[in-house]
Length: 175
Image 1: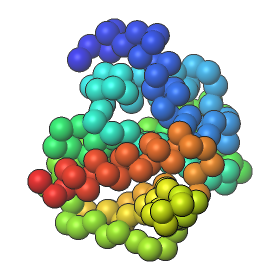
Image 2: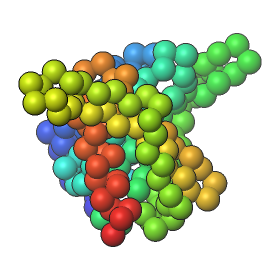
Image 3: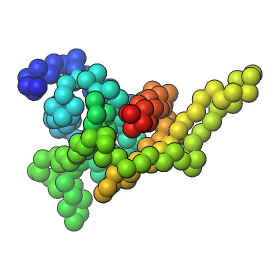
Image 4: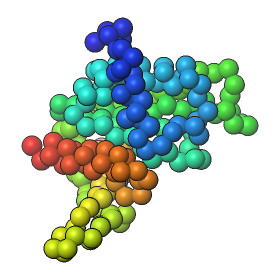
């Protein structure tokens, strides 16, 4: 894919997907730096957010100096993080943003643990069935463990994004 193919609508869709769990104001990115991240993300995903089978943005930790997203596409899982370079006294002015990430085949996942810690249930239906389940999983690769959960996300869109990602991940792993 040529990066020139990414139009403003595709970037806007990625921006909305990345910000589903909250704005990235904790990083102090300029508008241009945020656009650089979105363009890099589009390149790695292979196009707009719709090019991914599932997409997940991490819940921003105000103390964190990075923001990470995950995607599933075909038989691969990928992640890209944007952050600010750190110096002894905080963010180093004049340095570009830093990007780090990876792409791996789904077959590299050793196991997925479904966790009961952090799972939330909503029981408001009259028939006693849960109305809403917010799952949490731990994904184990050879050198990396990833915790993904829908619980604790502040918006319905962020919870749906995480639940959809987990469901697609479990389905892809089981194949």
